Image (cartoon, rainbow, N blue to C red; front, side):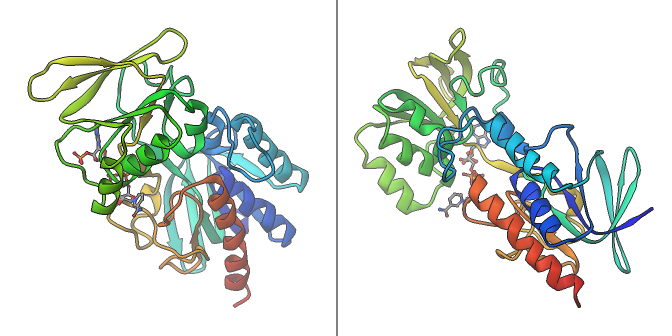
Length: 304
Ligand code: NAP
């Protein structure tokens, strides 16, 4: 088993940027990716309109561009599903379905997954009215009616953001009390074009090719109601893909690996970049920034 100076686990924007910076720093690097295609969550984003310099780029194209950049620098990639990470006296061994890989330093850039509602047509209509990111997709619903599902900080922030763009925003929450911070709640509830749909859960998405409505059911009376909306923003929490590293490094109660902007975790030689890190804003630009910062930290670590 050849030992690399640094292994990057994950090939979303954070992992790919780390790979580009690693190559430019002349580090011996290997990127391990679960899927055969790089890009992570970006691949499933219809259009990215908030990445500086590339307005309106298709998410798939963006993922490909990041990957092409890494390829041009000669970054080696390997597709394997890693099932175990072990800390050794001088680094980390990663075990996958295809083999074992060893690095003196490891960057975990495995991202996060939006919790889905589990509705029958949810996957099919994602990008066709169903979205998991208001700041990414909200602008496509300017002047239209939309629904936000959830009652946490993200749902309420999303609803406030959308209410500034959209004609009407329904907030569908399964209880009669929001979980979000009080200050956010006050701002939301003061907005004239917001209608709270309390004690309600989403039951069915309607529409042929594109969403044209959402059927919700009252949890108490079981009565159903159809909201005529073109967009359904699901904000019922996200799940970090951190299970492989939870026993190796400190994490918060949600499973995010604790680190500052430098990506340094509580475990020597283990760094974290992108959505799986504890951070206030999970976006492509912040993931890219993490990837770059991590390599500076890795260089410092390897020089010791
Ligand atoms: P969250 O706080 O876990 O809230 C998830 C919301 O979705 C809750 O209201 C929950 O309802 C609801 N929910 C969960 N599963 C559901 C389901 N299957 N069907 C319907 N509703 C469901 O998640 P989040 O809003 O994504 O926030 C994640 C973390 O980031 C939180 O710790 C949050 O405080 C933090 N954050 C902070 C800020 C800020 O400080 N400005 C901004 C954004 C995020 P219940 O309330 O009934 O459980």
